[in-house]
Length: 531
Image (cartoon, rainbow, N blue to C red):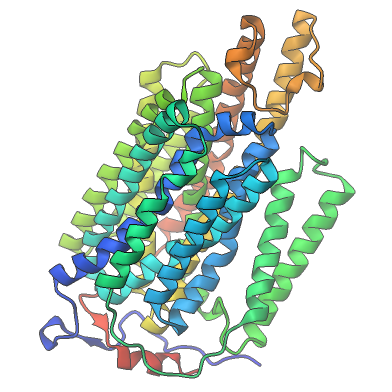
């Protein structure tokens, strides 16, 4: 049974002006934002700390390049698969309680990760972290949309960008220092005080208006189908080319299973689900459809650059975790400046598309330039390339969400906001997984060829699939690994350029709609939800 469509023009729903007392003051919004921003900081800093610490962590636990990739992919997979579920729950239940629940799940995963004694235990703990991060990723955007009208939202998106930048800057630096002084386990525990503080701040400061009472129908089947389909797809992307060949029977079975489950989930959401997790009618809006597609490349650029640039500096340039963390400042500074400046200009002018177009062009340029580096590239040059990519990402990551929210009715705000985060996470998860498989394969081939030239052979195929501890290798062999990682990491950046062009063309065809100056009344939400 299909569901009737929402109103034809959801971009201009009934609103309540600030003069009528329906909107929060700037002071009230900042107070409510304090706990939200601290929660996002805790989640973001945990990821950036781990990126820097991954080489010594995986080396200590005896992991391989596949294990290295899955420490990241495990979190991204859980975050990706559950983001639309959290977004839909935000349309149905108390958003404050949901945010605190997500924060608690994240804290539990962080605690377990610090006690890990094997790669399997660490990856499992990272999956738990991902469940919480998926909730925070969706819910923070939804709560802000509930408090701030679109025209003013760019201003507060600047605060979000600042938190992202501070977490990204401090994470690698703190991660490097923690690994070098306290040990890698504290990289997971250091975020716990921030998570606890954020929970109590949310309890004290976040007071949202009551939501209209309505009958709640939770789409359990749709949620499970979406998570299963995405999980099968990401498992195939991450393992193909390493654990089995891309053209093997196992690969074909995983592809067929993933497509079948995803196809069935689309049919179920369209014709069976009473209140679907992802309302497919949202894609009838051109802005929503194109913005969600464009966000895929943003995910690849955001997550892939953090993971593999860290490997580049440590494994191709022989830097310590602390020094590798310092090198990320170039990209983070670009992200910080672009996020704050574009947000302020959007709030002042109400125009947003120009920043998305410009940002997507810079992402193409930045990824292309990083595709030319090797182990001998000038660090100044590499830093400049990272800054270009950072400016591009900063100009589009929050503003894509803003464009979608501006065209969405309040009743669907959670689902629509989570769509952008969902596809961004898919891009990040699939990108990191696929690029990790390519990296492992190319490094293995390069190391094997290099050892053959020296007339050497190391047990286990030269440990070509393992993440090496460079300080323990003889100079000639260390040079082979450094060259292998330098060339391979440049290759995977070059491979992402076509996806960046795809994102650019999606953004180019988005129709710019003037930003609303008001938010919807709670009592109008129920009218929009009637199908």
